[in-house]
Image (cartoon, rainbow, N blue to C red):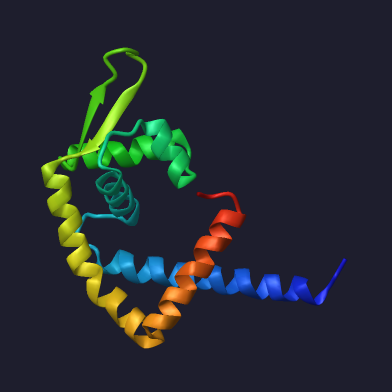
Length: 146
């Protein structure tokens, strides 16, 4: 069935996809040398949760395969940005936490991307940014991501 709301929904998601792609591209270019957007995202998440997560939990959070998350975590571990330790109760499971070097790398990345974020917020205005954030959170909740 083709209704006016179908066109509205298609336009909404099209704009979201384009804005997301542009944001990822700009942020990726501004990140410090060697840091990928996936690295930044994982470090930022680990810093905010203030605790350990399993690779499986991280894969679920970011909606990627366990293999993709293992690859990202391997690179972060090699760089010294995360600590990966075995679960003392279940040798099949591991726990990941951000390291002090990872926190420093995250802060450097945040400083590198801050001008892009500030410019975007200034361009649309604080009120529009708050409204957009609220709407995007509602959409995410509706789509099942909490």
